[in-house]
Amino acid sequence: MATKYVNAVISEEQNENSLPVLDGTLGPSAVDIQTLYARHSLLAFDPGFRSTAACKSAITFVDGDKGILLYRGYPIEELAESSSFVEVAYLLMFGDLPTPAQRQQFDLAIGNHNLLHEQVLSFYRGFRRDAHPMAVMVGVVGALSAFYHDVMNIRDANDRQLAAIRLVAKMPMLAAASYTYSVGRPQRYPNNKHDYATNFLQMMFGTPVQEFAVDPVLARALDVIFILHADHEQNASTSTVRLAASSGANPFACIAAGIASLWGPAHGGANEAVLKMLMEIGSVENIPKVIDRAKDKNDSFRLMGFGHRIYKNFDPRSRVIQGQAKKVLAHLGKDDPLLEIAMRLEEIALKDEYFIERKLYPNVDFYSGILLRAMGFPMNMFTAVFAVARTAGWVSHWLELQEESHGIDRPRQLYVGKTLRHYPGGK
Ligand code: CMC
Image (cartoon, rainbow, N blue to C red):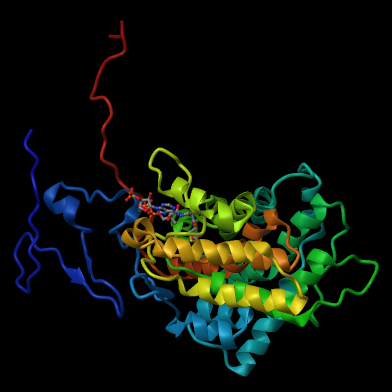
């Protein structure tokens, strides 16, 4: 059968075949194909969603060609420089920076909900001690839906807001407990005299038997990591949360689905994979071999922390993280040879034709592992830290989706299986 083509012409004239073009406030316009099937019995085919805007959103804007990332219109560099994670969480959730009174109320709400139900802590004992923290987090966040299900009505805006705040507030203790359980240490509680990042650090590394003084430089670095990872528009995990939420599912279960999606090495799991790769490289002399492997089409190896579906330029977050990594290492008087390997690897890759042609640049995960390691985080907690931060974005998208009325998300498919056939011997 000869291949057929749809020849679309973009014009200002409307006829019976016309599909409207929708303009956003920034970024590419989108052809509204919602009536395509009803009118033409045709589906749009876009596996991997390379050309599909799955929703309208007013939260985050990414211009991958220019390397721009805005949260509610504010450049990520400005927020990383001057804001705090809790303020950014408020901005993402509610659309504007809080007034001092709103901020105070938000802090109070976070402080009221940052404890885990004591019964939740007993769940951890059911996991193997060597379980990956992300596996534990998928389970425990999903299990929270059993605690907050019948008591909440997702049709009620106040209940929805409370669920979103609970998730952001509880995530540090939940993530910290997945680590302390694995090392057999009793879990510390949050203390409302501390800010969000300081609380996370004291719950991760402190013990209940003595005061734990958190280094403010490390707390600020962690807050910056949280800000940078808080949202990134319709990435795999956020889209997973939206898809799960479109059925009206419990928000804790939706966020657990997002955590599962984030764990993969092509997404949030890359920060752990980058560090493993840098350790395997071991020294600057071995970089050319690794570059050759990354370019070899017969080798499945990829340069971890490089490339991005959207950024075809520098990921603005990678520059900020590199700066923080240098700052923290200098502050601690540490000299991490992996930083030198990473910087040299970046330099060599950015001059290599293969990476230039494909517009592959370092992404947010390239330096974050070095920074987290310098701060004392074990490697298997890297993606868990990402999950704590991204919860702010996930709940913001969850809140935004609840205001829409497009019903359940139900992608279609191009069926390529067997045509009708009959069971042997059947009637
Ligand atoms: N190393 C070597 N080659 C690469 C890499 C890489 N890291 N990334 C892409 N390519 C090549 C790929 O082989 C392909 O080559 P060709 O055109 O010859 O077939 C071309 O570049 C385009 O790749 P793609 O797979 O179509 O790109 P994508 O948009 O589907 O994938 C990605 C994006 C992030 C999954 C990919 O770049 C990758 O696997 N990177 C390494 C993992 C990583 O760092 N992930 C973190 C992403 S940022 C944080 C987050 O989202 O959570």
